[in-house]
Amino acid sequence: MPNIILLPHHEICPNGAVIEAEVGETICDAALRQGYAIEHACEKSCACTTCHVVVREGFDSLNELDELEEDMLDKAWGLEAESRLSCQAVMGTEDLVIEIPRYTLNHASEKH
Image (tube, rainbow, N blue to C red):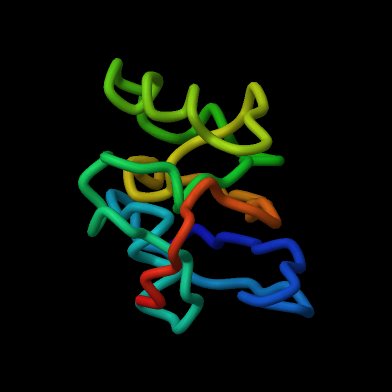
């Protein structure tokens, strides 16, 4: 089972975390299943950017971006070349190192 290393985030995991993920599972689902509340205002339907993450290591092991995710990412705060929507990024067999950006463009937190 691959691991996801979450870098420290001031609200979600102040000390960072290492979580287990299943091959074929999204980054968002793996984090939520283990109690790390990555915001996902659109219920993981690729209709917002609140679950935006930056993949610091292991980016190439994820599934390919599709056109809808690319279009949504253009609206994300702090977009980088290794950015993904965690609700769309499907785990492969490699470990990942993930940074959750400090801010989102969501004006009202859904507190999922």
